[in-house]
Amino acid sequence: MLTLAIDPGTEQSGWVLYDGTHVCESGVLSNEELLISIMHDNHAGRKLAIEMIASYGMAVGREVFETCVWIGRFQQAWHDPDAVQLVYRRDVKLHLCGSPKAKDPNIRQALLDMFPRTGGGKTPQVGTKSQPGPLYGVSSHAWAALAVAVTATARAAA
Image 1 (cartoon, helix red, strand yellow):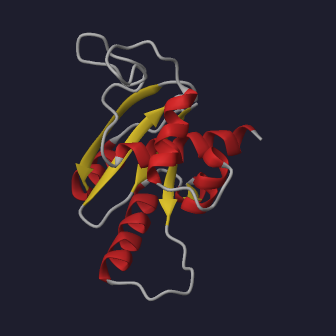
Image 2 (cartoon, helix red, strand yellow; image 1 turned 90 degrees about the vertical axis):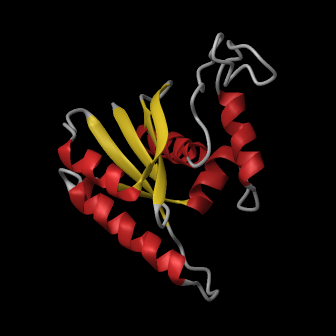
Image 3 (spheres, rainbow, N blue to C red; image 1 turned 135 degrees about the vertical axis):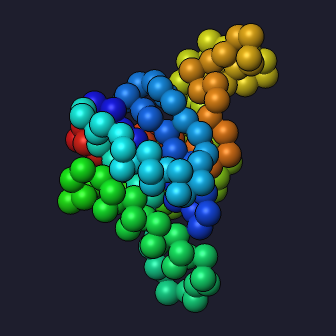
């Protein structure tokens, strides 16, 4: 089963289409473009996982609330909004790194360690244009989306 995973933001979001072992596609789109894509896409054989925001008692700003609005819009646009899996960042950290204190570089390294070193360059999991690895094209916010996809897929298999 394919998982479309989203790392939502206020204006743009990272996304990954993941089949459980391979990144099929990835990128960063404006929220409007991603919403249109979700609304017009054939969701057959796909599930949606979105990184969800959690409150830890600290004051938050406008950006957090705007991101929450986009999470809801993406969820509502899916063919079955009740089937959307919301994945908290804490769960991603625990799944990939075994610690809620993990930072983005730790998560990225854990993802790199999961994939074969078949490409070229200094990070063969990503590779180069002439010798791409299995994570070639994953960049920016798509890394966080991949972390959501891997966590959601593992949850579904458990």
